[in-house]
Length: 371
Image (tube, rainbow, N blue to C red; front, side, top):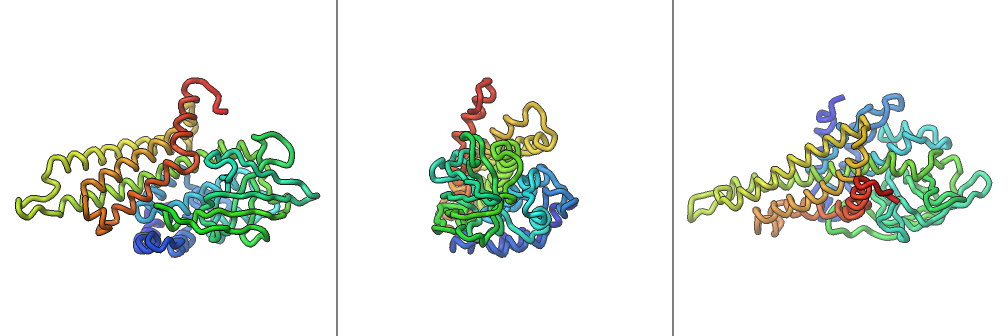
């Protein structure tokens, strides 16, 4: 499997459309179609179902590269992978072709976890499904559903028909199910093309569409590791993209009256250097986390809790430095540095937020329970 070779045409399409996707706040359909054709929607799914059999390390490579081309396309891809890995862990018996379809690109998946009532605490839905014979009845208000109106499958969470606040279920709801509706447009500061809109669910689906494994366990053992790692990789790609543009700009832009480039100013060089070191350090941490998830050890959970938060914070700093050294050229949108700057702002406030993750990390290392 050569991830770079499969990625190449996808990156060309995503990069070509990135400015339009951002300015028009338009779903990156061309980039998603390129992902479908590339086989990369099945990157981390097993070969037995038509996937590529890749793992966390390969996902970091794919997502960071894609985010450097188009952050919105990368986020759509991340949500698909996160949902697909939960389905792979616990396939719903009522949809035997689902994994094959997710691997082949016939179906694009997304997560519909966060709710208005629990906000960024995405692991704690307030909706509860009810059992009606062999059917499940679900009424929920979901927030920030990436690919809303564009995905073919929505993996949603809800409290189980009976049980306490941690007894949750995941249900795989196909697009087109009556009562599954997008109820608002997404207007964001950044990642403007990822269609992260609110949805309402007022639907009855077959009980066999429920994933057999407990939802709370799937959230923390599958969804959180893959999403946290992938989100960190997106932040890495955004930071790298902004840094590359900044280096190119300061190396070319000249102070004609002095006959020098911006890069010859010590303050500019220092800012570029700090940004470059930050990207390199966090790339190493993200890659170490990927290896730890692939072969779990005693440090895996703390890596999972720390990697998204630290990468998000790094991307905030690096894209800020890139804006500063590029000056008016970035502020006036002569360079797409400002798009990376805006896109990078999403990570820190995306559930689970950096504040929540740092709190969890502190609890884990001091021996306190997470809940």
